Image 1: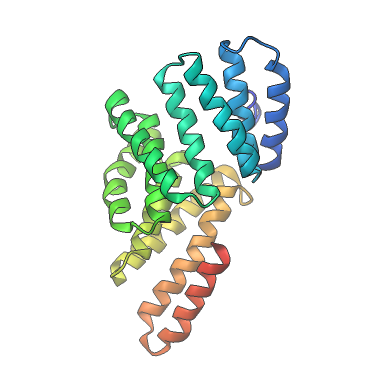
Image 2: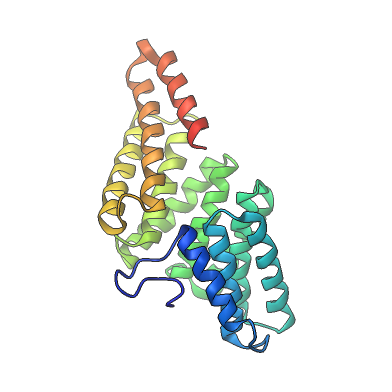
Length: 249
């Protein structure tokens, strides 16, 4: 776990720091036998580190090699599911949204079957699946999924847990972006995002990717709420919302 998180602050590494540690981890274990668990974990750290730093093409090559290796040595299904999740993340970052959705749906179904609905691995798979649904503008499906799973994650993992915050963020995005979102929906989405932003800044700091990502969604959702609350200036405000959405992706 020393390759994933700081022993002092206990926060997970991210960005270029995680990438550097990924290379260091891989160089430490690359000479070990292929079937050794430590070596298998090391290539996973490398792939995740590359992805975290934005090197998606390199991460794709590493993760595909990892998946091939895991299947070749007959790794447990839980290991293969974890690698498939990472592969789907990389597909999504490269614009291959439908491929990512298919994998994430399959991983979620298997996690649900293997671990039950109140397991952290199942929550993580549900979050990834919901992200794919939102990316493909399937907001109704994402809302149905997260309205069931996000409250369970909040109860079991705690409201300050990073995964809980991610699930609440995606739930709010699906709520305010959905066709026919009501004024009540928009207000709920903004309130949820503001609450998760406050917790994320307190727990992880304002420069953490989760905190900054929620901050961008707050700006876009507020613009949508303003457009709904001020009909006389709706055209101007809606244009602002569209500009923000395009700018922040």
